[in-house]
Length: 302
Image 1: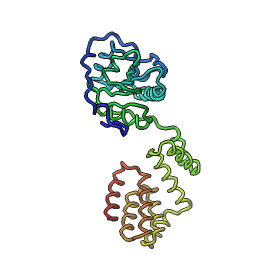
Image 2: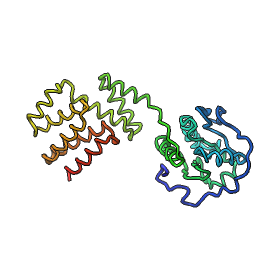
Image 3: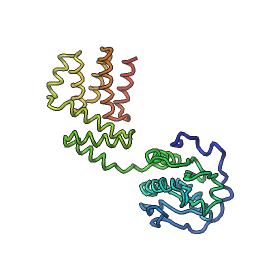
Image 4: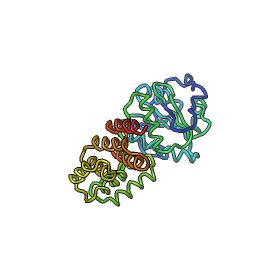
């Protein structure tokens, strides 16, 4: 698995020796439903957020990690960056509904734990799987990257990552698109992309808005008939491809434009290529037809 940050993993500095911490432990200090200092309560179908001390580390982290991945959040009350990161971690733990457990360690109250994990700055976050640390990072990480990191932790632990809840802003944008309110949909998708530039669903939605605008008032049957009669008319062929995509014939649309790329050059070829890429964006990168068409496009171009 990989650290979401560009800086190297803490483990490049050597292994963490936890042997001194492997000792019998009493009952955990906090489990499901108990409040977390400065954060929301745990919830869902199992334990999600717990306070951990040196006395409970064996049972609450090492033993628990044999069956459930554990993420350790080293924090302190005086640490301002901790107050940014910890609420996000707790939110994601609750969303995880027991798929992984967030173990919170107050470094002031547990200096020996901090020393064992070579904590030099906080917040510091460790992932423990199968009784061993597998990755770590220091500092505040943006939520999208943190989600990716946690997904990698779950994968390392053989756990299926729970589906992230759908963004209500995306639902609103999609609803506007479906009802034909293209201006509202466009503004909503652009707002989402401003907040999350890599949001594939918002990119697809924005490309779909552009497609919908291009076919306003178009007679689909007439557009396809016109394309048969004018095989080398770029504008006519692009419109026919749009109609095919909206008709559920994306494979045909992709082939139409790839073939057109082969027959053109210069600015026309570039216009067709960009149009085809916008159609790919609507379908998404995981669509098998898109993968096949991308290979065909690469062959046509080079």
